[in-house]
Image (cartoon, rainbow, N blue to C red):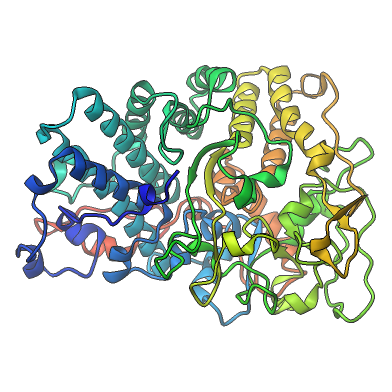
Length: 598
């Protein structure tokens, strides 16, 4: 697929509707003027114009729009679509990383001490509503287009509603109290946020599911099955288990990617995080990333992840997003090859904490799940083809944030000329950001079956994921020669990898509570460092217990969690940005309300 489909210049037609509620740098006088040289509604009410606007709506997915930055947006990491801050750092997958003086607003989010004045939330809110506005502009203009067939209009409407559904899904799971603004509200956009918008999100995904074709001519476009997966996930978040099951039954038996490949787990777990193997059978819907595209910047290449590379390493920057010891311990396996569901932290993984890189160190030899070493960079284990991770010398402040490094966002050395983007002070890459992958779908299907009492079916889904983890192709192997990491890998596993399926009938024999515990733990293992954890534990109602336990354990290892505390129900949702509340005046009254506890 050509990159310009997702990143062509957005034609700003009716962005003034963003006025006060969503963007904060426009004065009233500016909004009352017609910008010189701008295009009118009539100019873009054509097939070509609508096509460009749709490209702009897709382009908003990566959260790096230049027009947002120009009117007060923050750093690109503040709106990263991976949600590495809001989903993983906040959920115990990772420490903020770096050192105590760098990006302090993230520290407040990591320790549960955030409030409505934190500018990161305002950036995220604005960027997501920018996506909403782009889709609304399309939907408002579409009826007036005369050189498109009804079928063509229906497809554009469906893609626009799919994208709007995505942006609102992100807003809802983060902020809960979110105003619904659609194409009929381009003038009166200051709506209240007291009504539940899940039904509106459902309706958008439902229309997309019923209208979109099963395949697309361009890989980055949403298809019928991506809409089905998003709709099913929307049902899961609302605990509409029967509705969700109906869709999962179809997705897992009939679903295909935009290019027509049947949904299936890849043989290699790592293929989901490699630019050379992107858009594979597991990619349900992904943000298409590119490197070295001639723009002279990395906004198309995972700019939101630019901080997240080992410090003092070949990557140049910046030492953020360090996996936690709690996460590393979770990959321990017992004599059955199964995880320690209740007491993983009683079986800690050996680390090089406080050990100099010049001092001897032998990696842990006890059994672990191989997904550990595709997720957590640790000393003595191959860090892709960059060499064995050297430990402390690649960590900015080990005492502050621990000994580990992120790995899923890192490109390979052998093809970095193609997939690394060096056009900034920190690197970008062409690794796709997969918003929904098939393993996520399978585990949501497992959760749904368990909630409905179908425990054998739930176990079958979980074991599909574990079978892939146990595949020898998913293991990390030692180098043929440690001194020449690009010289190839041996046939000797880099660690003692032992992972097995749950024995037949285990879920049914142990009961629903056990099955749900196993499924939830499997999501922690499979989707770690992918921005999911915080939102999962909140929707399960376990966030208070999980984060309290995490803070008690992890704060004894690192110094970055001082004062950390999860306060329920306050911390179950992020605050509506205070700036947006202040800007929401209508008739002398603020239309936006704050979430509980702020």
